[in-house]
Image (cartoon, rainbow, N blue to C red; front, top):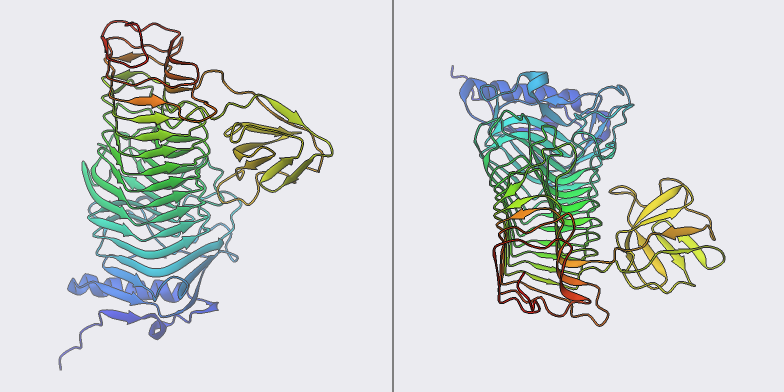
Length: 545
């Protein structure tokens, strides 16, 4: 008699999963995944595990995934996987994992043709005595032709979707909220979407599109080279994504030629977009393109790039209302202090940032600033302030002093001191300071109790020079052409169009056809005189340096 073919689709309810939110469904899921994986290995046909509507409790162990097995639900909020480890507090309990260290994953032992789609992962019940990077929603390594689609992953202890080495893969319409909740912000992982790269060689074909990352402990979305000896890979794109209220919005920690397009990065604590050596291998991205993005209202910098050999292009973005610099070139401690070559800022709209619109704090060689509109920056112009007593009250994310008359947003980005506590000012009116949460996803700005009414407070002063373009490091063969740098506010806050500080320099620069008129104090300020190069047809600059 012929042997009936093994099914290609398994209904989880027919294989022991209950989905009642009470029964531990992890053992049945693990058994079903093994069954489907064995069937795929036998005949080479991928299988689908379908989980109908229900709440599936996954307790005290993660499921080791198998090649050729997909997990598909009926949609977030309908098919829910609730992770917990109440019976084994030492187990990080991801929904699914397959890693190099635990399972020998590698290019020759990878997962192929796996789809994870249309379900929710709730990690809020996982508790650990110590942070564990494996306490993810999904933690898979070396995936070929993977699809991650229509997922809602929230409140995991570590990264929500923390998968590495995704070749010919797509991450689409994934929402990650409040992940990395046990990460201090300085530990490994803890992102909404954290993707390790480099394991497949010099090219990794990965697209991340239409994803949303809100309130995650470290990054909304990051790419991280996993071994400093590896070649930074090309082939990765991040498009149409939204990153809000994370420590960093989107970060490039080791790709080559990353494309970031049409993304929104708002309200992130340190920077909206970040290129640096903060990753575990201290290797920054290089040669990437950021284009058509909105980078607005981040508590720190809008775009922060450093520790990179360079060749990054920032084109056609709106970079506005950030609490420090709009664009900042600087090397973070702990990473290599590269002189970055051939950086390009082209056609950006840079306005309303608290300090300089464009700030150079690390050496640039052959950089080009072309056709940017840089205006109305330097908003952090309010003098030092203090108060206390009957006019002062506090709430979870604000301070109100009815006796104050502050310059609107004149304290943005400052550190407020109240007794032994500090908080960051995200914005202010004449009488109210709006405070950033003390960490992503938090509902309060305070690490302790909300201060009592009347408690004295203080705010530091503001820098006296706040330029459209500030050169605070040496530059060689810099091209600055066709930019308009001005302030059109009634109360101007951008003091100068171009400022070369005493630590900065402009050697052999090509500074031509710029309009530097209309700033609060002067077109330029040279604490260090430029040397050599060509300075022609710059409106507002009456003498040639």
